[in-house]
Amino acid sequence: MSAEIFDQLRTIQQDIEAYPVGNAAELEAFRIRFLGSKNILKGLFAEIKNVPNDQKKAFGQLVNEVKQSAEQKFEALQESLSKAALQEQADSIDLTAPAIPLYNGSRHPVSITLNRITKIFERIGFTVAEEREIEDEWYNFGAMNTPEDHPARDMQDTYYLKDSKQYLLRTHTSSVQARMMTTTKPPIRIIAPGRVYRNETISARSHCQFHQVEGLYIAEKVSFADLKQTLYYFAREMYGPDTRIRLRPSFFPFTEPSAEMDVSCFICNAEGCNVCKHTGWVEIMGCGMVDPQVLTNCGIDADKYSGFAFGMGIERQAMMLYGIKDIRLLFENDLRFLDQFSAAY
Ligand code: DAH
Image 1 (tube, rainbow, N blue to C red):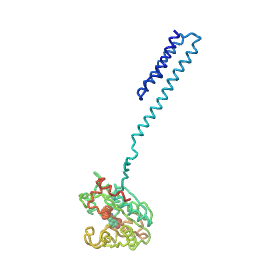
Image 2 (cartoon, rainbow, N blue to C red; image 1 turned 120 degrees about the horizontal axis):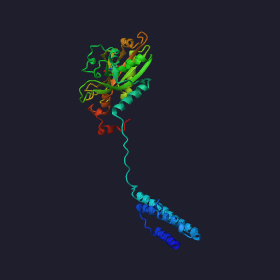
Image 3 (cartoon, helix red, strand yellow; image 1 turned 45 degrees about the vertical axis):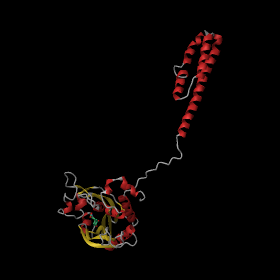
Image 4 (cartoon, rainbow, N blue to C red; image 1 turned 180 degrees about the vertical axis):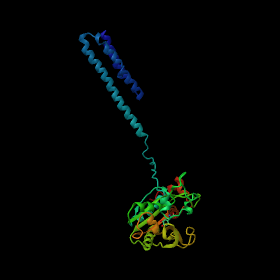
């Protein structure tokens, strides 16, 4: 009996040595057969009671040796197979292949223009104030001296919230003036960039949403000369050192006196082109001295303080700067359009 068991062990040993392993699946079969939880060596351990006492030790050693040889073969094969797999992977990498280009994205032309404007005013001490787009009628119109019967208040021109006469999508960033004046003590020196909405038919030249930058400076003894000088500085920084400005008398309910500011056409150098409609001037913004009634509406002492304000659209400036012919392009997010601004910031 014991001789048979020893023979069985030797056969298993030969099996281990001869077992063909060329891939991962065969290695797994090897492991299950010789090292798994039901491996064939286990049965032999149960036979140990039939081995004569004087041979038990030798048998035990031999079983362990066979088991170890299975383990060693398994480890060696495992290593060589994973090396081969790595090599195969490395062989399949083409180091001369061109790299996949990284897509960097780009800033939107409206953001580029807005950032430029913001930076110019920040350099002379204006800070950025941002406010809500859903506004109370009082901040958008009432505080800004716009009478109840003013056409701008009409549903035809302004988006009111459903079933509301009080809440609307702000029609201009001038509402931020009222917000700032009611919450901050002068001196106030802010610009307020942001989105505004008007119930307009969408066309190549106008849209129902666009962006404005508002400016407000309130302190003691602020004069029209301060306004003019500030805007002149802005125009030259924005459109070049040779830019000239022109202030035309105008009307806004919240400023007195009011003006519109033109800059000399930077496309044709004021010689006349399509952009300036052959006038040599391009209208950029509305401005004026804050009406004392607006100061009073917002709780600021109009005898002590005065101020100027201005407001400009961003889209039209972006369109002029980049030669964009249709305002709708700015809101459609077509990557073929937006990609063209990847060099700008
Ligand atoms: N809110 C005016 C508009 O949307 C622009 C404007 C004009 C703003 C004169 C001002 C200002 O602050 O003083 O057309």
